[in-house]
Length: 169
Image (cartoon, rainbow, N blue to C red; front, top):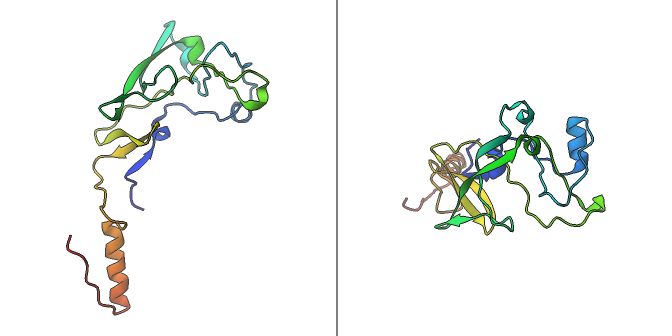
């Protein structure tokens, strides 16, 4: 199976992201803390945070976002930043959902800490406000078919005894 040219930024997440309060309870076996509308939504937690000897934990890198939660851009590329949280905040979630009876969040969610990018990886905007990861070592094919696809098609054509005139590459 060929390695993809790009993949979701979620592949870089250091911690599991919970899509709902039910998801959190199913995975952890615990009732999630009551949603606090005065805090930003937070859908992940650091299970080792409370064991830290520090009051504050620094996560580097995280996706840099605006006050509205939109990814920051530097010369058209997504930016990374540092996130500082108290160890209590790092160790907990603040999961909101439509059925909670709470007002809709007015703060953007807390970004998820990421693993360091490897040398061959870079962040890019797949579409406005959607950040993905690209493998810089993979050459994007200009057409619909990859080199592997073309090779397979030539082999099939040969088996079927069909003449193939490939375009110059």
